[in-house]
Amino acid sequence: MAEVVNLNRARKAKARAAAQATAAANRVAFGRTGAEKRAAKAEAERQVRALDGAKLDD
Image (cartoon, rainbow, N blue to C red; front, side):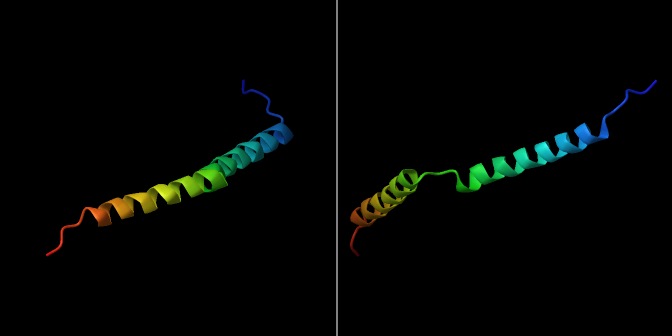
């Protein structure tokens, strides 16, 4: 015999799982703090300066 399923609980569990998936995607997209963004930008600028400084003149 099949197991009895509470449809209200199943609906809420499905909505909860969808919300968790959306939250995980948002953490990936927007999860960096301001300090992390500034540090990444400063590192990228430092790498560009280091590369430009290592160029040889023709």
